[in-house]
Image 1 (cartoon, rainbow, N blue to C red):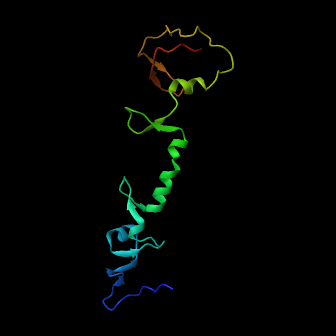
Image 2 (tube, rainbow, N blue to C red):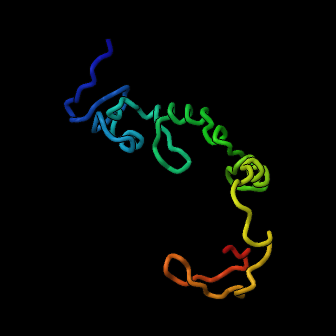
Image 3 (tube, one colour):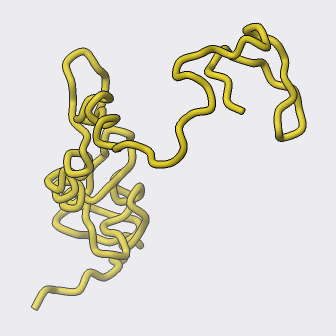
Length: 139
């Protein structure tokens, strides 16, 4: 059996030659040394700061890194790009989408809308005017 930690005559808790004013506290208190453990039983050895500066459980941090969730979701790192990006190229992702079924377009493919100039304001269906781009005109 482990000896129960009790408050000493000076009003603080003595554990392994160290003094703590509070026995149980927040993660920050445990990390700074003003409390011995958290309510979940984590001591200073079980806590660490992650790269964003949060105090997290060391064990949980390591197991989460082992999970490699971004890699499983299809993200990877690329030379010349900062951070994770989708592994498949944009071209491959477009090709896997498949062809759309339905009626063909009303105008020739790639034909520009000649009724308005680029940058003209056109009444939009949501009730306000928007700037028009020269995309294929759809009736």
